[in-house]
Amino acid sequence: MPLQTAYQIFGVPHTAHIDDITRSWKALMKRFHPDLVKHTKGRELTEAEKKENLHDIQEINRAYSILKDPVQRQKYDQAIAQEQAQRMQPQPMRVPVVIIMTGANVTSTTGSVNFTGGFGGNVVWQF
Image 1 (spheres, one colour):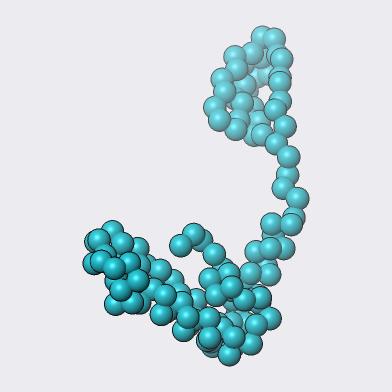
Image 2 (spheres, rainbow, N blue to C red; image 1 turned 90 degrees about the horizontal axis):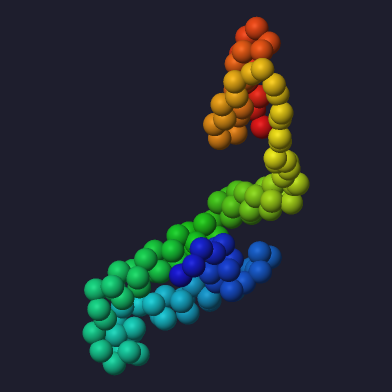
C-alpha cells in the first residue's frame, strides 16, 4: 500500500462521519483478512504475500485508531493542515554564483567558497 493519509486509506473525505470510516474499515479488514485472502486467491499465500498483507492490515488499523478517537483525529487533522500550509510556502531560490578574483587562492566545497590570500585573511562565503 503506497504512502497515504488515513482518509485516503479508507477512501473517505476528511469530513467523513465515524460511521462511514468504521464501515470502510470493516470492508478493508474483510478484504485483507488472511483467511479470506487465501480463499479469494484459491491458494495459500506466499511468505512475501503474507508479509505484505500483514503490513497492510497494520496500516489500516493504525489509521483507524487515529480516526476513531476524536482527540487524536483533531491532532491528526491539524498536523495535515500544517503540513499542507508549509508545502504552499515558497521555497528560497538557490542561484549559482560565479566569483572572479585575482591574486587569491580559491577553494570550493559544496555550498561554500573559501578565499585565502589577497585580502590579508580568510573569507568564507556560504551560498
